Image 1 (cartoon, rainbow, N blue to C red):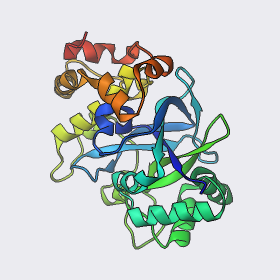
Image 2: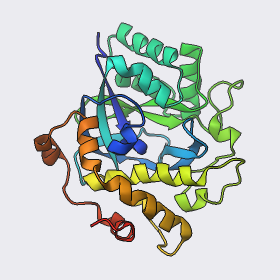
Image 3: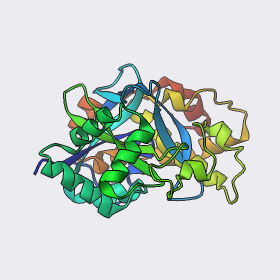
Image 4: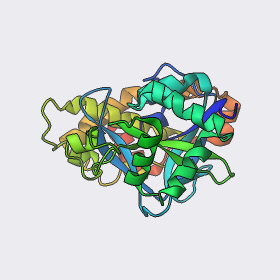
Length: 291
């Protein structure tokens, strides 16, 4: 069996202990990574509430999103999370993907004698890294596609391959009969938090959106670069003050939650993650009263 562990690159609420605790599973291990050829923002309607979840897109669509292990590299900050094979169904359910289909996909990789990420990389290469072409090929293989997220390969700088959840696209899910969440809600581009506050979607949960975004920003407490998510915050804006009000209380205990959710101990956490918060969060943390 080639897939006793599943390597996942997290870039949204998976960046924090608070966000990881949304799903009752524990990662076997974690490393900080820099994600290359990528931009992220709010675009995919959440399956956990009435707000927009984070999505990620390649900057150059002719090449894959990739990642290098460690803090401080060029690119946007993320985490490389290692999960046990037994957590496959929970991973799928969190990402709005049918659990049975994800298990079938892992089984196909097993039979091909490849880790899941490497197996998916072959499909991405065959489709010239075209996102819609890749979704169509995966749909043909599995007789399934998701309206939520689709798992894509991420080559790592140590030669391994991980997977990353990219939103089923505005231009199509890979099956004309399956309308993606992005198409359903008209999300043709990635939004900032400020822009999300102005979306006209029936039943939109403003407080839920702010709470979700705070979970993403918490990654900055571990030294993960979330500067792209904290650009242009006007500390006089009502939504920024609401964000700070929400962020303050959940900062308390975040380090302990993170260590527990990733099977680290204090020593390994100290070796891999920075004790210094990213500077881009300083104005927001000051507003939140976090010292």
